[in-house]
Length: 231
Image (cartoon, rainbow, N blue to C red; front, side, top):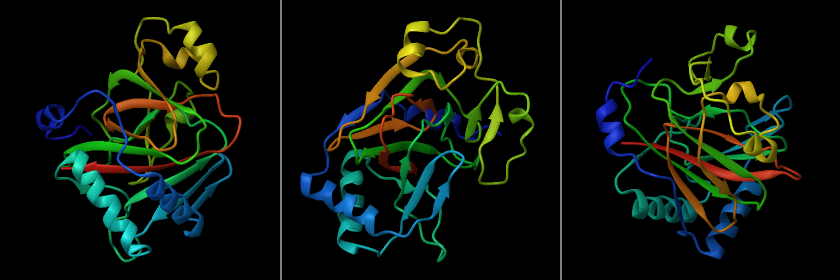
């Protein structure tokens, strides 16, 4: 799959941007919402626990969150999973205890004009590594594992691909410091554009075409809220 409206998507893109759009009180409200929400997924293999921000669970916070995103993003639509009622979810909370692999969150519908990914750290642990290469196919996990490449995803699961690879050897110093959980051969041809060190109180705005992964520097749980948007 390739996104149909590629020129429009590219015209909306820009460099990653750190912003402070939530007050300390609002961050605390979001953290409390996470504690109150029911668990949606606990993937023991990946060591990731997920909770979904369902509308009307806290209507005051719903309004605050949507209006703050609108201030920084302009007009947008949510592009997260749906609730059982069919309503848009406002985001997904990820609590992880080990680093996620190299991937891209570019969506599953070629008709969509994918827009920004909004990441709000809720714990001061971890980094996210963004690479210079972009991806305009389905959401994908990148691997050189032959068995992984045989995986046939369902409609809402990531593809598997090795088409991110290039010829240039990856920087060994960066690999040793940040990416020891990834085979360095799976980073061949990749270059780092931006390393985001998580900080509670900040929010990161980044294009959904950015290939990225977590850093291996997790010595405690990593907790954050991610919202995907489209035009």
